Length: 530
Image 1 (tube, rainbow, N blue to C red):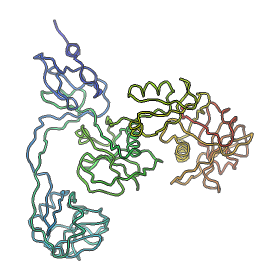
Image 2: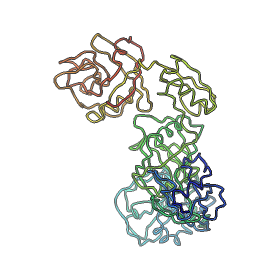
Image 3: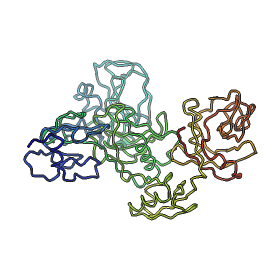
Image 4: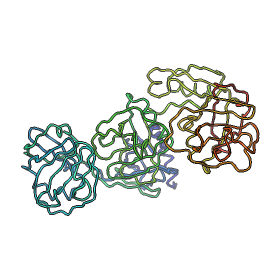
């Protein structure tokens, strides 16, 4: 009797662990000699000889890694302990070429001068070429600088605070970074010298790392990774909730460096919690300010603490995937705990989900099974798990306004509308009614918005019933949101002239809910496609 490869798999099925989310096509216990041992997300399983990745993961579109011939060995890990005076500072090398050129010259160097922002050891002679372009360095970074551009006056400089160097620096960047002993930089004194330089050895895991394709053949001992698993910090319930939301929405890699990989965050959500701890390998951080505010970073190398980064968790397994990631890759990222988001479900669906997790539901508002959950208390997953119960506030489906948002013609205004209504982070938004006439309703959000509301998609000819408009920056009351109940050839949904009105969307269903509402009532909104 002849079996093809797929048929052979059916004889090997023995229920591989379901928690890794892999189709049940591997055998964890079969003694069949035709099988070989491999590891799947850290768990040893059996697979038929001559199997390929596509047999195990037939429909996997996200990044998969194969680690082959892994072995542990003792090796230098680009880390050195510098005994300076009575203190010890541990340095992680960033530029091996420069370090090798200067290492033998460093022992015995004294601290020649220091300020509140930087300390310098030297001088010594260096033949490396330098650049006169000004750079701004972060705390804990170590650079070479030539006083007056003279190669005989080279200094090894440790930055204590963010520090711009305008004179000649080597290689336009850092030699290394302080990963331990940063506080010693503030206490060392002029005359303290480098007494010893001690290389640090550690266990290094080597092996061939493969970006797997469907036709890649598996070999005995291969390790396959299909997901990264992140343990979040319960003491940071809001920041952790944000991280859950980001990975739930977006698993696409935005940027890759030798230090970290970055994922695009959710614009419009402020991260209030702080945790500027050391960014160890595997650390997951949220950038709190700056150009990439809200983005999530996962570190592949150790970095010093930084006030702009909130450390929110750590990769517990699957960092091998991140090590081979490229920009544009999609990575299956799971968090512990997983997000408990009941908003947008019916009361009955929320009850079923909570029951599976051993949690109690307290229904509020409309308690009927088909009522839509528009809010939950507590809001964060960690708080819900701590209390063991959650209150779900329900609203009848026919009282929820369905809207279409015009991202294509009014992108900045659309972003403002989502932030103002809460749709930026939730499935159901909310706007309290501020003012109403027989022709329109107006909402006055109390939010801060960094972008100016430039004129976008201003009306031409007329505005129809159901259209949603926002007053743009040409008028005093920029940011007001309105919806029209009747057509107008003169005024937009916020009662402004057309040139001061940005049309951002359209009510598709339940406009009558807004018409029947009173000032102060909450209008609940869901976003749908036309």
